[in-house]
Image (cartoon, rainbow, N blue to C red; front, side, top):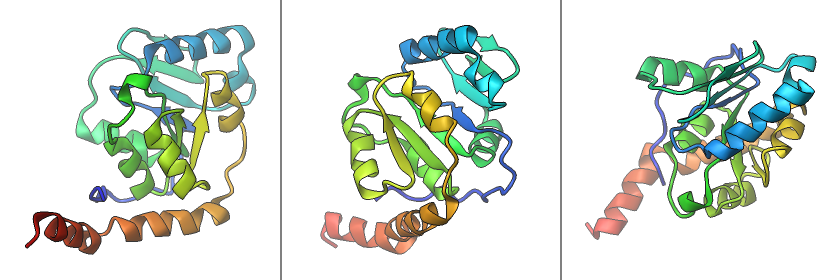
Amino acid sequence: PHPLNSNECSSQKDFDCVGISNSNDDEWIKKIIDIEINEELFAKNQCKVVLRSTKYSYDDGWLYVFNGWLDDNQYNDYINKAKRIFLPYPQTFRYRMSGSVVDAFSNHTSVIGSDIPLFLYYSDKYGDICQIVRKPEDLFDVVLKEIDYDQAANSFVQFIDEHSKKVVRESLIKALDL
């Protein structure tokens, strides 16, 4: 298990969705920008979405796409004030772990991930707090749907229990055969 993020959770949720990982698939981000330009789905539904790209920038007041560096405070502020975290990782990310997933779940924030093994695992284990999108267009459907916080609460508790300091310590001791 990956250690938990120790930052305090915020009850103030200013953003409907935030996708600020450096590993985001830029082609997904471009497609989301194009859909928003043509259909204005976030604007019409007053959904605030913030995404990070290495190639693209965009801001219509509802969808904000930036590129560049975030310091720890900015990163944590986005994570803490998001209803959902979007991680559109490319297929090349396949078998890697993401600290952004742990940061989100540690802060009682659900995750929307692309169709790669990492998110398939978490979606299978914590289906109430991790959803899979198979193409950029699917993001709009997920973000525009209400979150069932009561149903998600048990999954967050389970995740936090399974990634507690005690469990991490026991796993390390077992792995190191101490």
